[in-house]
Length: 161
Image (tube, helix red, strand yellow):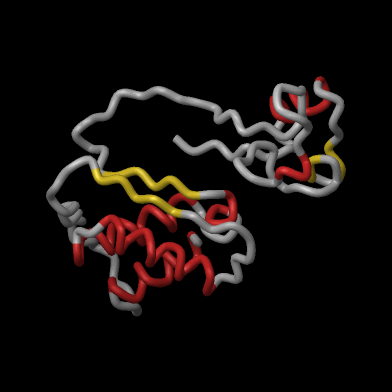
C-alpha cells in the first residue's frame, strides 16, 4: 500500500513543476527530500496560494481482507532507514509478543533512531483485530543448513532492512 511521495517521482515532479517549483538532486526546491508535508511552513506560500510543497495527502482506498493484520503509518524518516518489509516484520514480531500497537509504534521509532534517523519521526500502528497475529508455520525444509533457522531468519531480517 505504500508509495513514497518523493519529489523525483514522475507524478510529483510534474505537480511541483506545474506550480513553479523545481526538483534539484532529488530535493524539492533543493531543500526537502519530500513533496508533501504538514510542517515546513517556510516552504509554503500564503494560505490559498499554489505551492509546490503540499499538505494534501494522496489517498488510496482498498478493501481489507482476513489476511490484513495491521497498518503502519509513518513519516518519511522511518522509511528512509527501514524497508516496508523490515518494518512489517518487526511490527508483527512485537505484536505477537505484547499485542500493544502503541508500544509497537515506540519500538519502531527506537529502531529508526538506532539506524540514525535524524528528522521528524512519527509512527502509528493500527491493528485490524484485537487478537495478536498468529504464528506463521513454515514447512520443514529438506535442505541441510549449517546455520540455525533462527540465525537464518535473523540474517534475512538484517539483509532485508
